[in-house]
Amino acid sequence: MTGGRDLDALLRNMKPEMRPGIFVFCTIPTEQPIPAALSLLLTFREQEGTTLVIPREEAEAAGLRYAFASCLITLTVHSALDAVGFLAAITARLAAAGISVNAVSAFHHDHLFVPVDRADEAMAILQEMSGAKHQ
Image (tube, rainbow, N blue to C red; front, side, top):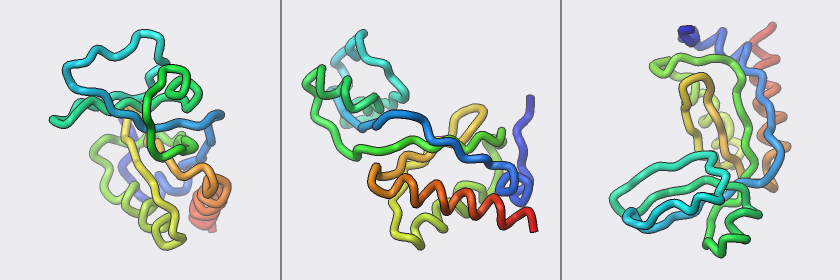
């Protein structure tokens, strides 16, 4: 199934959904194995180490240091990996409101990690952006 590329259609149909829980970003040395007990949401290997995005309670239970306690908002529209401007429009709007965002594009959807204390505001902005495109 091919994802959408039309910016107006993507914005109109993005239907943001907030996933339950609080997620955090951790890093472990590249050569260190990833603990099997973790429920990994995301891993990314960089030269400096492996980034893990996991539920906060799991990081705390494993004794991992973490940063950026965040809520996860999934944009449920199926966007193409080569869609142009979709995340740029969204992140620019959130930036204008002073909301930081770590965006991740996966095969089917785009996902936004936003600060826990700004998550409801981010959802409201995304819903407004989607609704504004209906007019």
